[in-house]
Length: 480
Ligand code: TYD
Ligand code: MG
Image (tube, rainbow, N blue to C red; front, top):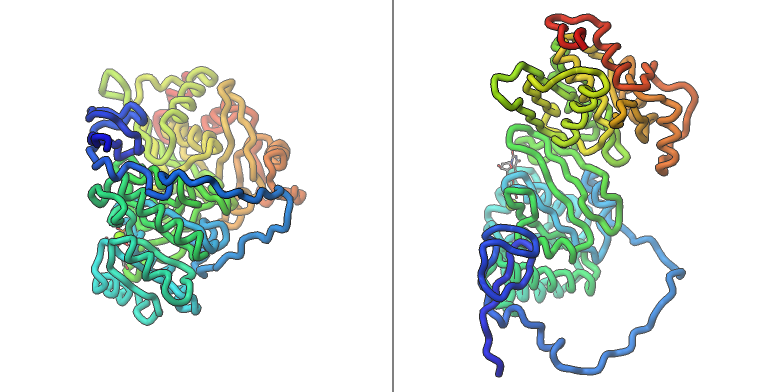
């Protein structure tokens, strides 16, 4: 027999190395390489047996195709992100920081499904059955017929699952605690996590039960260890939020059965997670209407409009290099807006610190927020208060032109619904054209629901704000 030398595996990406090193050359992670036993790394016996391959029947792309039947959990915010419900035989990975509420969400999903008469099995590898019960009790779900187990061995779990009626949903909380006899490394290592996930995925596909795996997240937001697992599962959802705020957002990062731009919004209360069907109201509560430096942005998350307040603070710097601090938006996007303000509108911010914050802890990923950010920045710099009933959306190009963005009608409708009286936007006709080109389904139903202030460039926006007159210190803009 060949001598087995130890193998070194990167715990972040799963790359195999022949010796230990500080940095993984494959993914660039530091101090992520751990020694694992060689037996754990070799292929299972079936793959080594050298048998001849069985012939597979090939099929055509066209054919009878039922769209996968979905089981709705009746937690609408969850169903939306999952793509309209749980697909039988699919495997979902839910990642999130510790304490964010993954177990709470999943026990609620399990309980609602079980109460609707489906068989649901909840396996906790982290908590004792008692703890899970206590939580369910606190959530008022103790009477739901969820079948519980506290177990970490995947073979035992798979054997248990194959008994009796096929469950509709199996929750594994969490995949990092699972271990299998077929791998020799310690629980939590890449090999263990990958092998355990493989067994559970095979079970899901064979039995047609949906499996939800919980995964922990590292400091930099990666689903810890099982990045390898992300490729194996059908959908990866992340559960986000921060300790300072009550709301939590469920976001799809990958979904083989649905869109990846939908979000589900929840609020963590003393009685568990509550759905937030109208997130804009939540994000716009506690607005400070009389202060310069705030602008309301009409954004889109998937098919849903979300209005959030953007806050900017521009103050003379006391340091050699001015600070640019951003919470909830892309810092390089802010640099771009600042550069365009300087180059096209002559507003110099080189001597100012710039702080930008998306209120409520929300994270914006769309470039459509450019215009709202610029408005907040100019308002803060000039001291001119923006009208509290205005919303802003639009993209800014490097030439200083304001560019239309998709889904303008949906954004305007939401703004009207929340009592906003005016929208500052790039060319509205083009907005609608843009949304159709990009596959939007909105109809241009005649007049917009609220009056529009159509601007064609960033300079128009700045001029409009400067004309409002400063509350204090507008010199910077006037000089420009
Ligand atoms: P948990 O679901 O255990 O988080 P995770 O599984 O992601 O680690 O949630 C833990 C936090 O949620 C805990 O800090 C307390 C809070 N919480 C509430 O505020 N209300 C509740 O009803 C429950 C069950 C938890
Ligand atoms: Mg948990």
